[in-house]
Image (cartoon, rainbow, N blue to C red; front, side, top):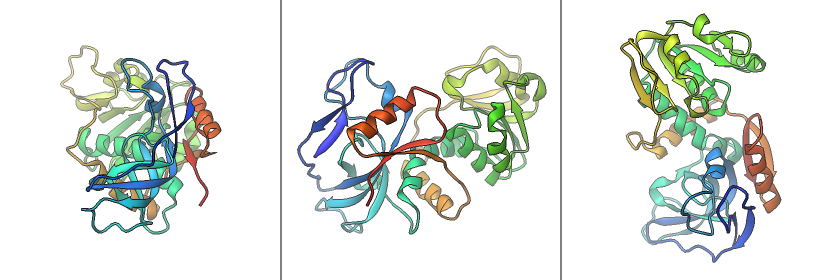
Length: 303
């Protein structure tokens, strides 16, 4: 089977097609025939250091079950499933049984795969790190990104008042999601406009940019959740949490919930690019990660 990855490490290494042996599942594993792969920034960043080569990137996959380990029950051949796993830039992906989530009827594979990494991240931010409660005022910085849009929608479902910080050009998109107030940081200073407003401030901008503004927007005893590892010094009694991997809420449980919400139109995702499941498609996807783009990038086959 073909996989797509790197034979050499380093940022300039080209993506290549790699012929691999067909996968064979252990007793508790399942082999998927890949249908769709969601492309994430982490796929492009992990190309330095001591790596096992060849390196096959990817974490988000939707596929059909093509082989089943001897102890697997309840998941017949041909079942359409999704998973957060590894080495998904490939025609076949091997997954532990307990990491698989069957897709609900009528949920398109493109929608399902596009929500895996951003959805898991957003759900754990809202329900675990921020622990958003009804009636709270939640400020989302980076609200127009894939994670930010889902944070907005999930916080609103919990009964929070959501305020957004994003570029002016994303105003209509965020208005459609029901944000109560939008502060365009390229037009206004959010630290002034939203000073001391947030019970919860969630910063999903790359690397948790500009912690001083997060502190300015937060109430005295607010919770701040950020991609940054720390905050500047402050006299406020802030509860600060850095977003990091956690199994406190399992990825499979999160995906089951997200897929139900997508199926019933209670949340929405945006697929901006659907590229062919070829070396050219994966290469173009990697290139798109390095420039400004709108919506999720998905590489997919046509069934």
